[in-house]
Structure formats: C-alpha cells, structure tokens
Image 1 (tube, one colour):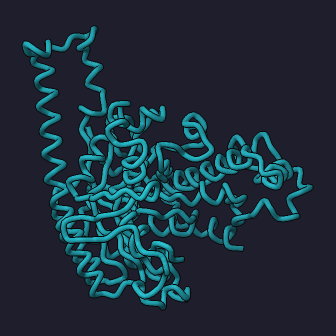
Image 2 (tube, helix red, strand yellow):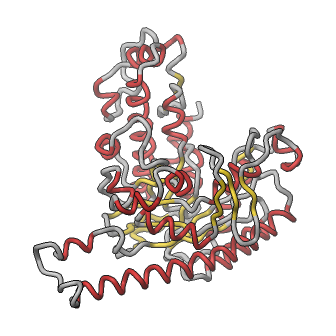
Image 3 (cartoon, helix red, strand yellow):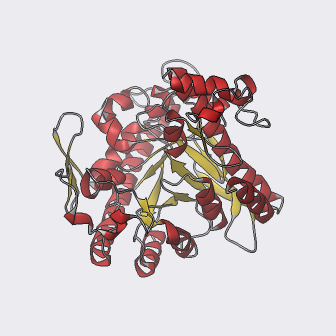
Length: 432
C-alpha cells in the first residue's frame, strides 16, 4: 500500500517529479509537508488546511506521547482521524527533541546556523545556563517532560511503538539530531548511535508490521472468536481501514552534520538498510547545506523518496528539489504567520509595518488563496495590531497556500522542462 514512482527526471540535475501512494491517498512530489505538531495546524481547521493546498500533515511524536498520550490517540483511530484529517499523514521520530531539549536547551541555537552567527563559534557544551532536559545514552534518551517534569526514557523500539500507535502512513526511525556547533568527533559518535538505532527501529517496525499482518489474516480467514469478514456488519471489510491494521512505511534518517565524510558514510549505511524512504536530518551550516544534501542524494537509492527534515525557506526548497529532495517539512510558514510575516513573490513582508495600515489591496493581486481573494492588507494589519485571533488564521492560510503552490509549481516545471527558468525568475523577484 506504499509505493513511490518517479514520473519525470531532469537530466542536468537530481530533480525529479514523482508520486507517493499511501493508504490514505497520493502525494504528488515534490511536496511541502505541513506540520501539525500536536495533531493540529495552529490557527487552521483541517478543512482550511486542505483548501490552502496541503497534501500531507506531519505530527510530532514527542508532543503527542506526552499529551494526550499515544495510546489514547491509537484508541481514537490514529492522529489523522483524531484531528479529522483525511489525507496522507506522517510522524517524526522524536529525534529532534534530542537536540532541542538537550544540546540546544536554553540556548539560541537552531539546526541551521550561518557560520557568521556568534553562536556558531562557541563550543556547544560550554554555553547556556539552563540544565538540559534530555540526556543521550547509547541505548536511548532520557528526558524530563517540559509539561510537568516527569521522567521518560525513549529507545528506538519505544519511538517506533509510539509511532505505530499514532497511526501515520509514513514514520521515521529514531535518530540523534546534533547541533551544527558540535565538533566532528562528537558528530561521529552520534552517527554511530544513529546507525545502531536505525537498525533497531527497522527491526521493531518489521515485528509490529508482522503482528498487524497476522491480525488481518485472522480477520480475513475468520475464526471462532473473530468471524470471517463480510461486506457489511460489525466485521465488515471496511474495518480493516483502522490505522491500527494498516501498513506503515518507515524512513531511515541520514545524519553527519557538516562533514562530507560522515554524511557520505551515513548515506551508504542507511541507504543499504531496507527502509521505504529516507530523511535527511541533523544540522547544517546555511552556507554548505546544498553540498551536504547533494552528497547524500547522490548515494541514496534513486528509487526511494527523500525527505529534507525541518527546511522551508523558498530558496532552500529550490535547492532541495534541484538536488533530489521529494518532501520537505517546516514549522516556518505557520510560525512566522502568527507573528505577522507573510511570503510574497517579492519577498517576505511584515504586516505590523506602518505602510500596510492604509493599503486597501490584497497581499498579492494574483494570489488565489482565500485570504487574498477576500481581504485587504489593511484589514490584516488591523487584526495584528488589535491582536485578534483571526489575524493568525488569515496569514497562515496565505503562507501555506504560497509555499505549497510554490513547490507544486516546481513539480510542474520539472514535468515541462522549465525548472531552471522558473527558479531563476522566482528568485530574482523574491530577493529584490
């Protein structure tokens, strides 16, 4: 029930257009994956999300494990059904929280840092006054909940078990996401852990998939305690659509920081494992992210989808697509919208600026999103200044429409052979 088909490739690059088939629908790639951290895309309903152009939603394993609990989500039919999302779905592994609650906790460090940023020059483990909430060991990660301080221990097996309960179509192996400020020695140690955890994640995933297959087989054959399935009734075939019985695809994650040696090593090791697809994770220096992605995708198996984790700026999306990335996810478009920043073809604008107070025009005259079709920049500026909740809704609708359409247009340009012209024209206007 999971399949990836490459429909068109560009000979002069790694760019390709494809189609992912999942139990809950198809994903036309390249595609932007909308992040709904707690089984909710902030400020939007699932219906608004679909209307904005979203194809797939990704939820956060760590957050749903803590609240409301993965077993409750399982009993609700999986996180997608829980939130009334009817399309394809994904969950991360919780590995990013190893970084955000560990090395980066209480510090101004993100997973993508410019080498000119002061934080990049300071040894990671010597800064910050707050004690980290996560501690990494070879078997897993212990952490204290940011909600109530309770102690938890996540292993690769536990991460996969949680993700099976959450019921997403595509899940990720547990990994250690390192900071871009870490030295190569620590990156190498973390990489060995990630590879060991990938193997354990895959073994646990296969075990749980076999258990599901056995349950389905019993249901199909019938038994004394589980009557044979019929077209209708309590044991109808449609009950097999329960996420608890549907197969899930598992992606392995490539790490290695900024090191070419480590990135290529990871791509070779993870690429040789029996994963359904691959995530490109970890930390990057902004200046060499492109080369790191290219190193990896030149090695990973061509016929499986690649997902660049946590990346969502327009320039980076073009870079990723050109270098063979099929999927992206990022909280950026929704997060900046809540602060009044929106994407336009001429660059980002901030609706809190004075020039928008009397601008009785849409954010973009040729944008077909719900926001631009019905509201003016002046009205959105008013909502943000008045601190009205509707401000975040309307800005988020526009940003998600902008990003999902941008990646969709990249796909169309790959199919018709105009990708590089489209990239040049867009970036010339965007970076004016």
